[in-house]
Length: 105
Image 1 (cartoon, rainbow, N blue to C red):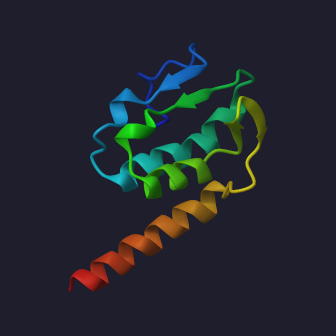
Image 2 (cartoon, rainbow, N blue to C red):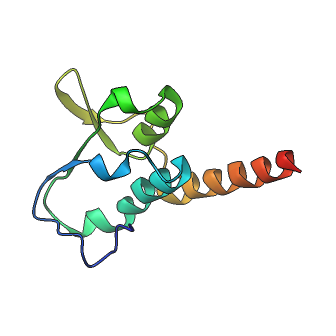
């Protein structure tokens, strides 16, 4: 599923990420979340992504957090100090994949 998929309807401001578990790969999920940052600014409606944190490991939760420019912590919406712009994050994902392939032989 891609964020620019015409089947996706942006009429519900909350996005429960049920489809993402189990993820086909953590990289696919992170790429999806990152690419949303190219599309969502075109719309004026807020979108709130919700996750069942019990279903994801800490490292993927941290990376998911890094793809969101705003975050709710303690019930307060705030700018995310850990946000990484999408071009930069996609480059990081590509570098991780390249390193993993080199390490695998």
